[in-house]
Image 1: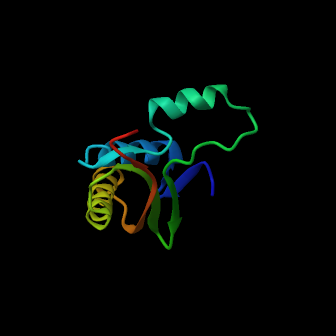
Image 2 (image 1 turned 90 degrees about the vertical axis):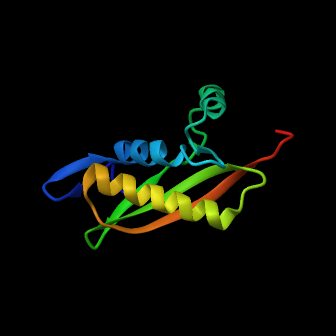
Length: 119
């Protein structure tokens, strides 16, 4: 994976793809945050050793002219996971098509954290 995606005569950094997807996904009811984008984990990462693994955020790559995206999320307890995953896929596809006009081959949704009422 590279730091930028080359497509249709221009390049877009993975950070920009991450921002586009995060903005769309975090508007969905039931999604707490996209991994790598909550304040407490950012503060924690400031204090952890430099060689510690970073919290993974949105990843993407171009495959056969279309983009494949993996979206790791934290979700709130009590929401139907398959329904949330479908909403995340739809929001991701719409945002990427609107912003960069690229075909989306696949959106992989990975639920990495469950936020329960006690958290």
